[in-house]
Length: 83
Image (cartoon, rainbow, N blue to C red; front, side, top):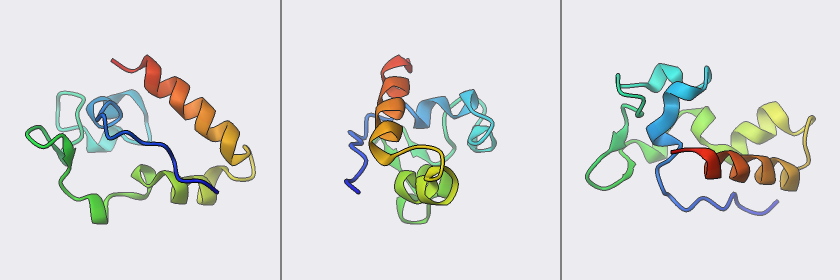
């Protein structure tokens, strides 16, 4: 399995309010409470929740539904649509 091609753009971190799986991380403006606005990085990256660990989340919850490459394509399409 290849690594998820994350570019660290922060789009997913700035839109946690759009998913029921990540809304609990919302700091009140749609952005993850662990997103550092200055560095544009996760302040708890090493200890981030499972839902933020793309490969691990896929293995645990989605591997029986999608092939990895299809899952990546779906997620990249979603990323492109985020503001």
